[in-house]
Amino acid sequence: MNAGHFITVEGIDGAGKSTHLEALAAWLRERGVPVLVTREPGGTVLAEHLRELVLHQAMDALTEALLVFAARRDHLVQRIEPALAAGTTVLCDRFTDATFAYQGGGRGFDGAVLAQLERWVQHGREPDLTLWFDIAPAVAAERLAGARAPDRFEAQDTAFFDRVRAGYAARCAAAPGRFERLDAAAEPAAVWAQIERAMRRRAWW
Image 1 (tube, rainbow, N blue to C red):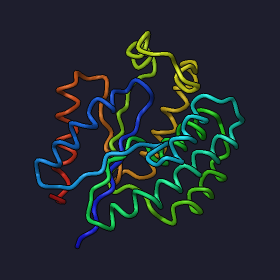
Image 2: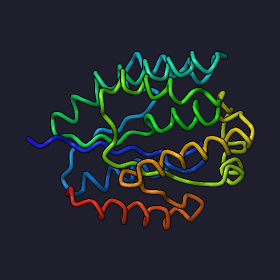
Image 3: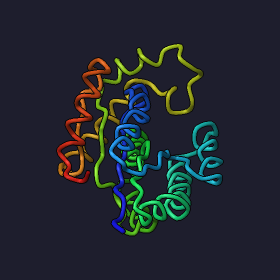
Image 4: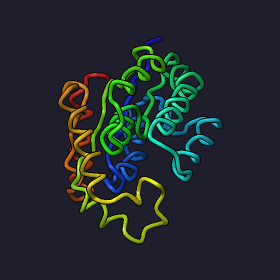
């Protein structure tokens, strides 16, 4: 049995990635691909508890990073790795790129520490493909305005999200073969067209 593929979707809050996640899962299933849809932080009972702490409890940047990686470790052990080994394609809403973007870029936390945590927790596991929904923070903020009560991250100012976006850009530049940058400011149909082109460029299915 061939191992499944690991696909992540990334972007700042309001980029619209969640809108397309289930559509992408349906697109894969139509092609006979078994799919697990999951998210980070989260994906397991323990990781979902840690997610609530990260999103709603005040803490410093190191504590935040440690909780995110603790959730990721449980997620990898309990769900991601078993699914991939069984031949299931894993479609994950955010992964480690988000940690480097939010904690590294947004919070200004030490990237070397994040890289060490990445090595300890992931043992070389990284996505096969990352779809980055890139959008100007001001546009994303307009989309989120009044949609729901903001969490600790959504409540940050535009300057924070400018730094997060720059963090994503740096990750994209460092791994151009893995990343597909999408113009997330486009109309939903145009964004989906970009996703479909990116998927068809892979000769996996």
